[in-house]
Image 1 (cartoon, rainbow, N blue to C red):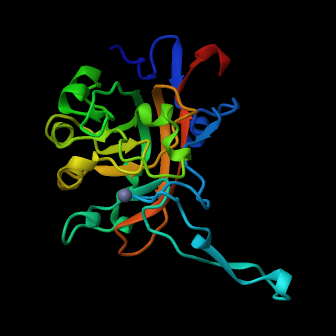
Image 2 (cartoon, rainbow, N blue to C red; image 1 turned 90 degrees about the vertical axis):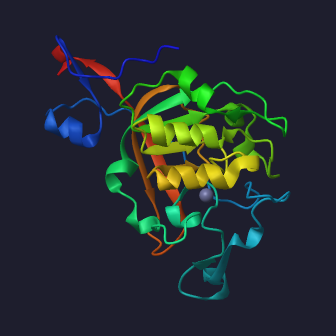
Length: 260
Ligand SMILES: [Zn+2]
């Protein structure tokens, strides 16, 4: 498999990541590539872990209401820290592991490669991603962030109410490959767990011990494979094992030098 060339400055082409910072640095007035929101909206009925009914209606309740004569609408939130698109902190699986506010901003923001992953078959009838599958992807040796677009997206699992136990995810051999044989510091996936159900603990522990940040529940339906600038910032919930994240991508594009 051949990956799109990562945009780079060379020859007559200035290859530019059209982030706001890059545009400012180049004094370029070109419109930035549009943001692609890869965050699933938090709403009643969205899929949550092992529930057939999805997120209950009372995930948000108004404790003050304009309709009742209060001066404001104001809500209580009642939801799992791992709801929807979210980031896991090492404390999710490791005793004494760091919490969500300790994650490195330099990892959460930066260049990411979105890859489409062919699946095999696992024991629940879905696909899993093994070390062998990752090797076949032939990812660039220096890639630091990867988002895995799997058949979870094709099946629309993040849009279905009922939890799908046959989701596609990494097994522990893939996790060991990432931590042992790659430069990857962040991995994202398009359903509620980075680890396949049968291997979930080992997969997470291996990634967290290896210092890899995990993003789960991404909506990659509008994203093609290729290079993007990623901004994924979780709510700063002190001490938490996870947090909802707003995650957006901006395609890295090539701009002719003469256009600048
Ligand atoms: Zn999680």
